[in-house]
Length: 139
Image (cartoon, rainbow, N blue to C red; front, side, top):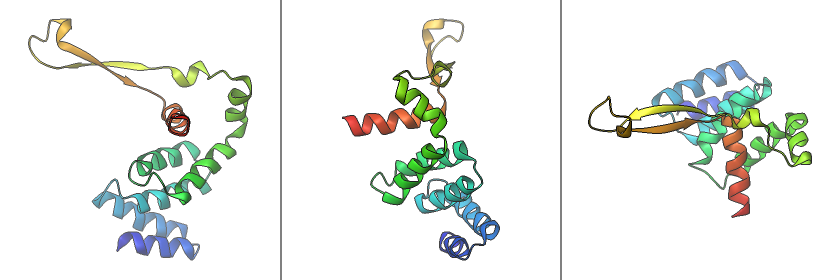
C-alpha cells in the first residue's frame, strides 16, 4: 500500500511525498523491487547516479527481466557516459573501479591461526553492476 501510494505521488510530480512513502515501504521490506525502482528513479532525477544504481542492483536480483529497470540502469550509465564511454572505447577497465578491500572473516577454530580465516572482497558497486550486466549479456 505504501509503495502504491508512493508511485501515485511520483506520477503527480510530488517527489518528496513519493520518497517518504517509498522509503517507508523499504523500511518494512528492504528488497521490494517496485519501491527500489521508485527510489532509484527519484535519486536518479537528482543526479545521484551511484545511489540509484545501488538501488537498481538490488532490484535486478528480483526482477531481472524488468524493462523499466534496465532502462533506468541504461539511463544512469548514459548520464555518466563520459566515464563509461572512455573505458568502453579504450577497452581498459579503470583500476580505480577494480580496487578491492579485503576483510578477513573468522570461520572456526583458533582466532590466532590465519588458516581459520577467509577473505571477503568489497568491490566498487558501479564496477560490480557493470560487470554483472556485461557478464549476463555475454553468457
